[in-house]
Length: 319
Image (cartoon, rainbow, N blue to C red; front, side, top):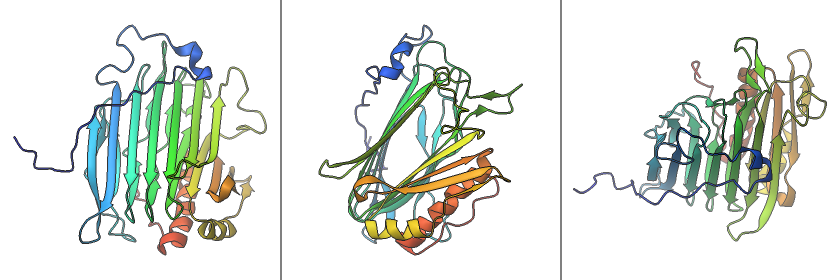
């Protein structure tokens, strides 16, 4: 039977393997209940945005494997009603030991999109293995993407590793954000920074393969105390934002973004330039996710105003 939705294409699910990562060596034991990457534990998602014949940005390419789900794209951004907005969901609940995920996102020439998650990502307590995710984000000439997922909650004894590759044309702009909680702060007596390991790597490159930057942080609270000065100190929430954009945009965004420490409200943020004129790196520390998300969203609005000439609208009150 012929498929009516031509944008759905199938492909082999890529292998997601972090067994060679030194920090994950203590956590390679197979879960006895279900092996690593078993059906339902090896999620894959491919999204491809492009302009249609009328110049409208649409989701042209879609492929997914459970438990990852991509909702129908919507056009609810009142400042950019022509921009497709898409939520990534999971039908499998929290990430558990042995889960492997890969997300491939492509925004083609002059297309644009906004992507988030339907809810926070919970990393469940793990006993035998770890959860790993690979993200490949590609932006072609003149493309624009805002990637703003909800926070990640690592529970007690979580083991999680993530590698994100940003392949961005010099004329394109990507706003990539991630927010990490210290744990389930209000669970029983609290569960802050009781996970086993959190390994997160992001690296940027050009379409010709030129490597621009690489940032990796490995947090092992059992080896290096997270509460020490220079790590998290007295803060509970950490946001990391990468903006790859042409230098003329990066310089203007940098000028209107101030680094500060608000001791009364317990919020701190800082900004710096990425190497090789790749863009900007913006970081936020806070105590609760709400204020941190608001600062990230305000920074995104500065980026959009500079690149697209339009602000980011107010967040929905239920988000």
